[in-house]
Amino acid sequence: MNENELDLNLLLVFEAIYSTRNISRAADMLDRSQPAVSNALGRLREQLGDALFVRAGKGVAPTPRAEAMVGSVREALEAIRKGIIPPPGFDPQSSERHFKMIIADPMEPIVLPPLLRSVDGGQISFELQPPQFLNIEEALIDGKTDMAIFPFPANEPRLHCEPLCPLDLVVLARKEHSRINGVITAEDLAREGHITLSLAPGKLANSEKVAIWKRTKQRTVCYVNRLSSMANLIGTTDLIGLVPRIYADYVSELFGFQVLDLPEPVTDQKFFMIWHKRNDTDDGHIWLRHQITTMIDARTKVQAST
Image 1 (cartoon, one colour):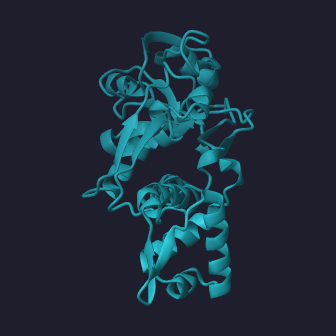
Image 2 (cartoon, rainbow, N blue to C red):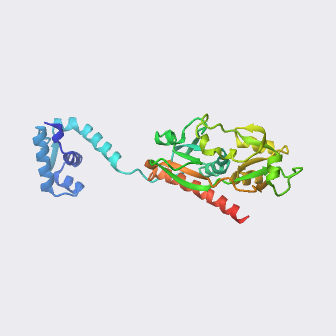
Image 3 (cartoon, helix red, strand yellow):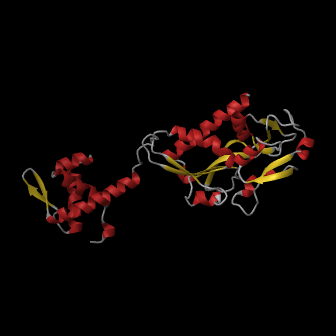
């Protein structure tokens, strides 16, 4: 027998007859007519050179050849079913999904705590991957990460980029600053010492996407590589720093900073939620995207009302 000539539909008929031991019941199981099932069995007998089933009482009994092949047939049919039948819907309370994510530093305290609270008591887990060492486009395309939240130019056709919120920079200063109180001028910006986020374009992965921190003239007293370090130092000195508004509002709620508009905006850039198009219809990924957009929308609405 030439295996290329074997009709896989005949294996469905074979398995149904084996399970029911009856041609009529097999036809009912398959929602086919009895002559159609009998005809299919005849074709399979001819291709395999074996009777496969012989009459026994009111039904049929398998031959030794049928007994020998039924296990392999069932495994093959199950593999096909698993490949073409969609899995059950995603349930965040019972799923054991592990999501790998690249999140820009300012967005980490905004996104991660409510995301973790949303799966409290479940089995879902998250892994944050360092944006300094992974190229975002490559990591998403290669499947090394599931999601990125980052400033991102939408120039890769295999990826989806959904804007989340503006990346507008504001000035962060401690509430008891000795010279700044509620407003900051261009002269203040040039005079005051700054804590500056250190990103060396070309040396760290994705640094070219967040180079907006270099667009203002400033006197840097200290370079740091994490925004959390900026907040700690600004809160205990008279140094100031430029941070995204969404992050500034978050730390201001915690520590009572002054959040000051720049004399002139320096960027119209945005934070994006980025994923590979192969995950567009994945139920778990849809859930993750919905959680993120819901929490960001809620925070930006609060910002707009204040």
